[in-house]
Image 1: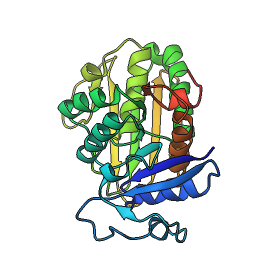
Image 2: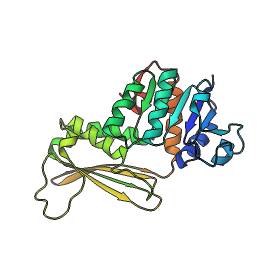
Image 3: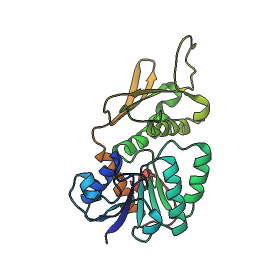
Image 4: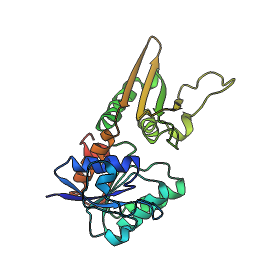
Length: 268
């Protein structure tokens, strides 16, 4: 049976990738394409926008009019839009796959209240490779964490608006959890001037923005005499698109609950 998928932000960079990824999967079909009400692309064919040719799905701004036309909504937009979509999906018991980052603490509270009523996958990164790295980080942190200095490096394109990336923060959370630390207490997001000696339990973050970098992440475990580095480099956003559609197909068969890509990939 084909899963009907709605894509939010259909005219955006990631929205187009998601539409293309759907077209490449025989088990999925694009049924709704959403954009902002003020977009000049309302009414355009979503397939043409994504460069895959006409698909017969016109871009719309009104999710409420189409709640019966999809099984899963995939949303990689912005916090305000995602909050609205989550409220609508909760009211109509529609599943969601969410890749939006940058929520404030207040927005997070409202967001997760909405998701408590529906099947939802929330992940900072939908690449299968990155999610494998999360699993590898669990092992590395348990083995090396107490005897190593831990630093996280991430690089993205010049247009990314939040820093550090959601993926880098998720990596930090994995390492902190496995080493019994609270990331909010030990994270170091920048160093300048006379900082003093490095705190033993610190988890450092380095952020680079520039060019068209899709996404690079490296976690370094630096000990005396050796270091171990776990690195993932994305060369195409299609890695995220394929993973998100894989999550949508998996989620369509799940009961209400909050899941992540570790659940989708059976890595727990």
